[in-house]
Image: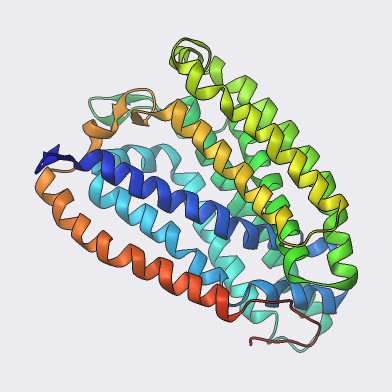
Length: 339
């Protein structure tokens, strides 16, 4: 799987890994804003919450499209195994994202309070459902997928276990943490104050769930345990929990000192550290515990051809995303609209 001396499978795994991480830390806060939506009862506060993410939410989902499309094109075997194993989860996630997107627009078009209430419920429900399904998918991958002869050989409900439900709850709570921190940065007044209080509770819950998932994960696969607790793996893994604790301490101080941006950066750093931990556990698999990155990869010529497109498109995506965030920077006040 090399081309001109380069390991294209590894390069593509890094690119898709980056796309998934970008989706999590960016779309995570706007899904989190939706998860927290019904906690605010005032219509003005809800309008501010929606308007704070209006310029960027659909652009954030570009990374999900890139990750899914890249998996199909570059690692077709992994795509062919993961989708049958997680069909109910993935379909529900996509339907939740569709419902969320529709509610996002239609809540501004309804002329009755009752109609707006139900669109608000749909927006919150779609955001929560999408986040929960992403956690279920993560848990399903971590616990392993039964593969025989390069095909999924498990049952329809293999993805539904206590561990995957725990992962689903963890992602929902984690995204809500990102959402509350986003609102601290982008809003003012009572909404900002309530978001700061929510962030405190959500950080405690997120840390507790990270600990629970981290303790459970090594028992799912002996190789996970060896990677995290054996030598020399522990030399790579031991800094992760230390950095998580340090990030939580900085986060807490930033809340007490009423910083605006620092809590969001710390919450995103927490996700990055958890993602690094997952990468340490997964490598070299793309479908644990049987299919590696190289097993699932397309022919080298295909990966090289697609890499040219990725080299062109990924900087463009990064550039227009950064431009959108820059143009719509600053606080969002009551009465400001993007619709």
